[in-house]
Length: 207
Image (cartoon, rainbow, N blue to C red; front, side, top):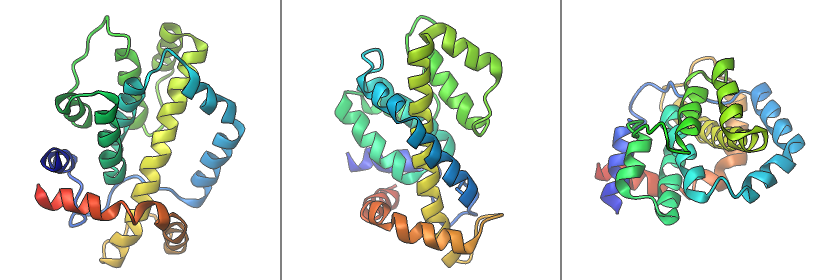
């Protein structure tokens, strides 16, 4: 199992020795996202209750977005959750390397391709892709899928912003980032990410 996670992190190319170029938060973007979630709390609850989106489906979405944004904490955490939800190691690996098989008649395919597109365009999806998502799943389920994507995007950028401060301490700051914001974010998010860091580091070393 440890070897499995180490391979995931290796393939995601998540090493602190490289130039830090992952997507991170700035103050205004963070506030906008938090505000969005506060005002869309009913949609978050609806996502959890939507019988058309089971746990494995959600985890696949989480893994695909994480693969694009390269957050090591989310990769480790959601790989574990995906295993618990019933996905095989091969399926998880395919999601995290964006090598998943596309089946036109598979109910999840449209959502997974949209999740990848959403992340690759940095939250600026093509209108045609969005319309296709709504047409295929219906308004309610499509909104819940987008909420799942936005939630993991929040997690990805949070983990990356936490690491950005550590990278800065190593002399490799992220571009166009504010040191004061990074420091404050690091302090606030440390209770969440610091406990996970030894696990992530362990699996990276074993790769």
